Image 1 (tube, helix red, strand yellow):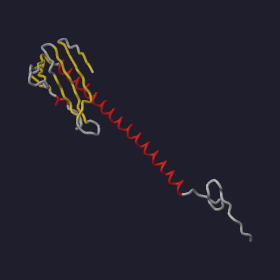
Image 2 (spheres, one colour; image 1 turned 90 degrees about the vertical axis):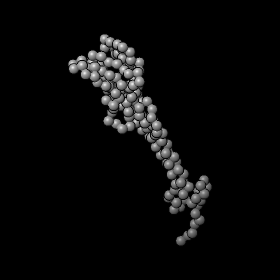
Image 3 (cartoon, helix red, strand yellow; image 1 turned 180 degrees about the vertical axis):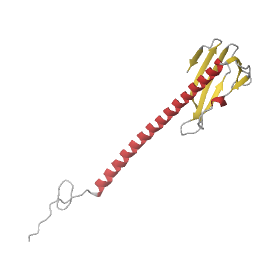
Image 4 (spheres, one colour; image 1 turned 120 degrees about the vertical axis):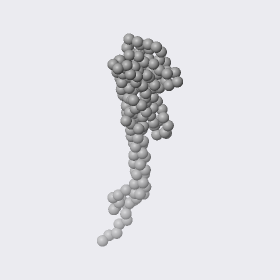
Length: 167
């Protein structure tokens, strides 16, 4: 049996006979690149998920505003007379056409079942023969806490029942 000297690979400095795996440095570098790429993809996914959640909240708030507007419209069609007290801009007093009784319309009548959102009505611009209303839906302000207006609608109705809706 003849003994031979192992040949060295001149580029990497490692032996060619019996070396079939990766070196420790190559493994650590590939793991580091994988962790960085996974972190970037995770951050992109988190941002997209948060944007989707915000958009869903805004859409839901818009639906709550539209529903409140429809209910106000329905109650005004069945009313003979309406007025707002100067001190209570969030209350609309309606006199029903059928029995002549008075009904008070407040934000509590339109409150959604969701705990995180609340509705606010403002009838401060109402005059005789013209109803001015603003419907606002308040909700959580992202992850920072606090409240913000998620949707708002301004409405005006004249004595003939013609609506003007502004976003």
